[in-house]
Amino acid sequence: MLNFQFYNPARIIFGRGEEENVGKYIADYGVKKVLLHYGKNSIKKTGLYDRIVKSLEENNIEFIELGGVCPNPVLSLVRKGIEICVNENVDFILAVGGGSVIDSAKAISVGAKTDEDIWEFFMDKKKVIYETVPIGTVLTIAATGSESSTSTVITNEENLFKRSISSSKYIPKFSILNPELTFTLPAYQTACGCSDILSHLFERYFTQIENVDFTDRLLEAAMKTIIINASAAIEKPKDYNVRAEIMWVGTLAHNGLLNTGRIGDWASHHIEHELSALYNLTHGAGLSIVTPAWMKYVYKENPDKFIQLAHRVFDIDFAYNEKEKTIVSMIEKLESWYKSLGLPTRLCEVGIDDSRFSEMAEKCLVARGLTGNFKKLNKDDICNIYKLAL
Image 1 (tube, rainbow, N blue to C red):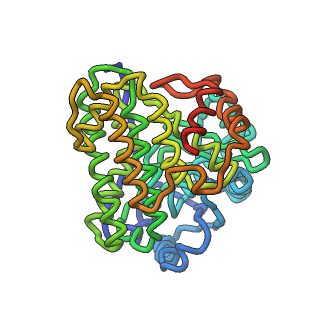
Image 2 (tube, rainbow, N blue to C red):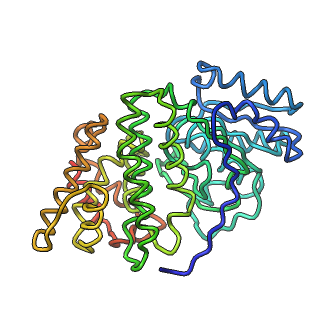
């Protein structure tokens, strides 16, 4: 286990009806004007928007709106939000939605407190974030974990680069998690969210650092919880207890706790980002395609880690003279789980061919050199993974 520091100040407010108290929570910070940031029309159709506005008004909190966040949030809207925050003297951002809305809010919070162009922070990891506009969130989909993470991911639609930055400066001050707000999600979005959560767990699990059994077992427990409850959520979308399990795992999967003392991989995310940037593929669907292909390509780097996963999470018995057979069986079982949720496991299923593999592999490595930690991947490696995903 490596030396580590763990710090996550996000206040998690979990349970039914808590979104109705959002104005009171914001008022605790002495806020004068809020940017209310959200997606398109879903929060208005469900009545969530009205409840949020009522709470803000009851607590005498002035607000200005910026809607229109799309899946794979884009730089142009971030820049618009930055302009609003600066011109309107916004001193708090409330993100109401899923990970895309929260990621957009985080990027705005950085850009509103610097004279530099916000995209420079995404392309140059050496840039330091000194100050941000504080953020609060009301989560409407369990997926990215952005509600308490150090990460934000934005797509520059001008050059189709999708990049992330990481900083504790914009970890939300509070995040309201009411599982009931996920009841109306389409089954496909629920499935994509669960795929994203599972991938966050895999990215941390596949490490070459030894003697991390405690966090291994925490990750394994979280994986089993998602695998079991994803199907249940699709079958019974208004089962509060099932939704609550998924929502809480989604938060813990990406708040840094399960990464303590270890170095995660993150190649699957980087490789998938090129797919969703170029083809606007839903992130969770891209991960259900890339993850099994990545596993097939790298498992020989440390077969015992895959054997452990197969045994502890997928309940596959194994013999030491049949390691490869066990690993193949585990990957097949994972692919079957994705398919049971209605998710793709091959690029051909979403209409993507091999014509742009080289381009995506090159873009994946811009400002990185190589990607991944379980196995360091170069351009040829990434192309080979895309080929396995066909």
